Image (cartoon, rainbow, N blue to C red):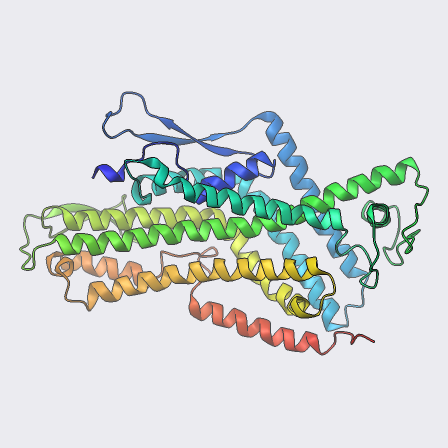
Length: 449
């Protein structure tokens, strides 16, 4: 049991994400662990608390406003187009879904902090694999920070390169030309121009243009807003990956624990005195509610049920934070890939191809790990019910029915307000819908001359 206690400053992927986004002023808080004084020295106990400062909250609020303002500008740009064209209509729907997702992301960071605290505490206590040498866990933290750095670099590139600002036909570009493009688009963004096309005083030859002070300020403002919008998009995608992988790791740890405990049971299990285990009447296995009894062999089945209760509590905490985002994330993905999937092969700009490929890979990772959570729990239910396991033989029938009902109702998994849980059938429906929309849209894409 000593390995189940946390030692050292090793962090989970979710904590790594919060720390990095805190440094970039995207998140208004980070999580800090504190050792509880007076606890057992052999088994130290930690508590996780929110750490934030007033200046950090001001900067984070400013970043959030810039991100959302940039996202709403995308909607205004879409309204300039002919929405009777399916390509422009789906672009418009993607802009709305993307803006709602950005709003949901910052809403979660500012109002759902208690869900993050609870999720990290449970993950550390019950599912974090620890060793006497804590350096064995450090590469996981290093990988998390490397992924965060990659997202930071990819989020900065669009502003530095002028991606999606310069005409696709323009090959020769320089720093002056990129800044002129920012200035031209800033006039529309800050309501200094009624339209963004044609791009005002844009010089396609890239020669230096005389800019007044207002244009320089608005150009710098556009660079900031443009950068924050892309950073927000990349870090929303990163948050989805980190959260889904965290719950997947906990699910895998639970199933491995159940298998190991089952192997430790004697082959001919004998039911001993009943042990009181909490069960919520509506939610099934829980740490609060009415109680039922189930058979136990040396307390091992009790540990399986406790592990499941922790896993369910972790799933509820993760979904409590993710639900507003995952709901928008699914619909945003459908419209985004329906209109941009062909960019992987047809876009002239290498960064445009890289961007779509990166987001598509992140979508596969998020949906793949999320669906695998439900698959693992379905496998656990089949193993528990149909398998000739020692754990099943030694478990009380009422507790067995409760566990089967819990796993069958998909209480463990990435869910959007309980409306849907991400599994393989849902992914199949999303893919078929996206492909259908894509086949419609691609017929109206202008053919290159």
